[in-house]
Length: 185
Image (cartoon, rainbow, N blue to C red; front, side, top):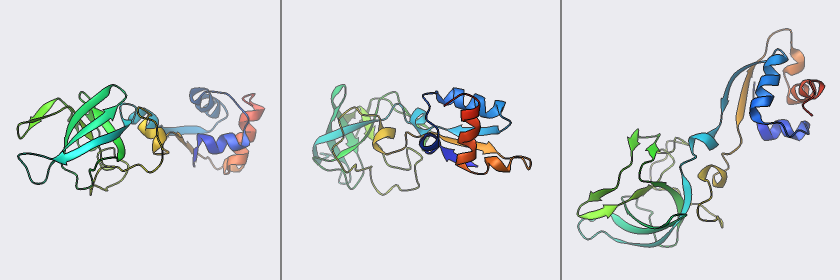
């Protein structure tokens, strides 16, 4: 059975950390098969704003973007058709590993223009298979905010195995009740 930490906390009033909760689940006889925490996987990615997007001087399908990041202004060469002035997106600085492509970013030169990072698509972050353009965030997100938080992916998903003798753990209420009886809330 899979459930998010926030869903569990709807039924369990606790300040316990994720590790404490997974340890208590195992102690209660519920095998934790895994925890998927996108906030950890997307930790290097942050919210950034494109201050100016202009045509690349040596390529028809590329744009040169001046991107405001938490560490100041950065120039990024972008091939996405939706890159435009004023958009808010997800930024990966040089030195970041891009999970969807397996590439480690470096500062590079693309057609005689330096690029010191990347504006990311959903496929590059392994959120979906969408690669039609870079992520365009709707809303007023502060620059430097973790991308997982802005995308609503900062809630860990816990996967537990249910044995035949534990029908009480087939619902979130039963799991929360067991953890409360264990003293976690």
